[in-house]
Length: 551
Image (cartoon, rainbow, N blue to C red; front, side, top):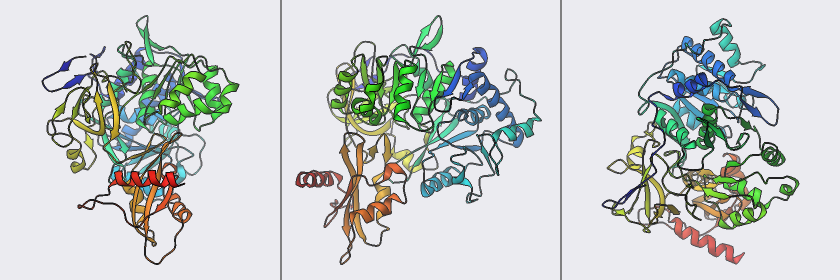
């Protein structure tokens, strides 16, 4: 890593591999074609599995069927499912055609789902048996066709039935299948959703190179990633990779794509079960895991852990939200074989800025140096001036993992970049003399509940529709287990009576589980605001602190 002292830019290590010239679908499938194995993706709850060779064949069959149906690089394809063995067949099929994939959170309730679908307008949608009911009302006339990735489902065409009809039951020769070729640096391959301070999710446009650079990071020799090179091939230190993060989320999606590309056994659970979680780590001797802070807390404090032998676990990579230092110490004491618990740093808008660890050193409280392919500078939010070591400012990032922009939102895109093309993270931090990044606070107002982003403005807009609410301001209540709990400060309309539970129930009926007002409702006489009418959330935090002291 080299620091350019004249303008205080720090760089990640030189990547050990160059970015590919192929688009994502061709990059992944060529790895499967050229290195055939019998390795599988296994659902540890059902016992069902799918081999990577079968994923390759199913992907080519579905892609050719979609091509015959009329899909092109302009087609937008939605995908809404829990972690499912067939999740990546439509995803990879779309990328092989150059189509745009939109992964959708299966926990979305109606209003959230409607917003994302109306924003992206997918023409084709793939769902699972569990999510099918969300789309069965014929509300979205832009969706031409819905397919179910499960088999033996009544009243809807399955992906298997569609392929059989389109191909007359004749499988495609994967080695001769013609895949999309475009410019991987600029070609739009996916629209991921990310909450913003305006409330509703924005569509983050990601290119082939965004995905490919992240896949290469997983196996880069510059840090202790999932993979290690053995006899010229990449493998894992563990017997398998445990894919516990959700596939619709960038973290889970990219981890799984890395496993598919390298054909490493991947273990999947479609619904979380604590005993299954521990037993899987024990039985498959998992050494290296990516987790969210709530799962790290669970490992540190659960009484069930004592029934299992997790001495195999060596490295935990925690991301999506800050990890409490006390939790880290408790877990290391409880599982003394753990060599490192490291915090990673990334955004949907920049998939992995810091990977948390290098071979040389792991500093407590740091997310590590910039990742391969990545450059970072610390910028004074007021003056725009670049800052030197140990000076706190906004973290700005540049590199091939940086989003193309926000879908159909030019203003938000302009607001997210500096004039010279750096992505403004919205996070405050600094770097030390070794170029290690430390996150201090967030400029953004997002509440982070168990790794999920919750926009205060969305909850505020919802509560303002309640007939007894005059004004409202939302912040996060610090919580050891969840990170932050959404809490609402409410000004009641004069002369009316309303309870905390009434407002909590009102919100709970209209939002997904992570957005519920678990931190409670606090009634006050006025919401603190500046002259421009912007809510002063720092003042709300002071009120919250005083309120807690009085309890």
